[in-house]
Image (cartoon, rainbow, N blue to C red):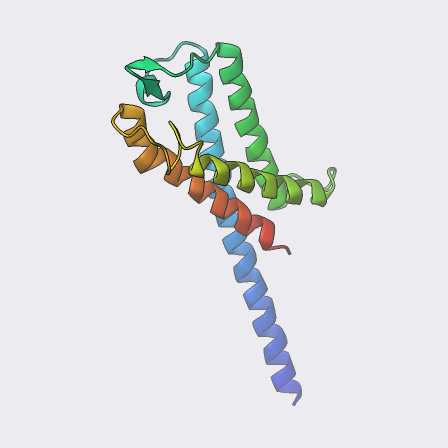
Length: 162
C-alpha cells in the first residue's frame, strides 16, 4: 500500500514537472515572438523600409494609414511589455510584482490578439473583405494565423496555473 502511494506521488511530481517545462517552453517561444515583432517595429520607426509594403493595409493602392515613428515606437513598446508579461507569467522575472498582474495581463494579451485575428471585417483579419493586396495575402497566410497562435498560447499560459 505504501509503495502504491509513493508511486502516485512520484507520478504526480513528474506530471507537474512536465507541465512546467511545457509552460516554460511555450512562454519563452511567445516572448521571443514578441521580441522579434518589437524589433521589426523599432526598425520601421527609425526609417527601415524592408517589408513595410506588406505590413500596412492598402486601399486602391494607397496605404490605409500612415503610422508615425512615434506611434510605431508605441507599438514596439507594447510588444516589449507583452514580452515581459509573458516572462513574468512563467516566473522568470522574480517576485517583486504580484503574480496576479501577470496572470490577468496574459489573459488581456490573449483577448487582444484573438480580436486582431478576427479583424475588423474590412481590411484586417480572417474575415476581411479586401483580399487582393499584398497586405491581404500576408495577413491571410501569416499575420492573422500568428495572432491566433499568440492568442492560443497566451490563453494556455493564463489557464495553466502552477
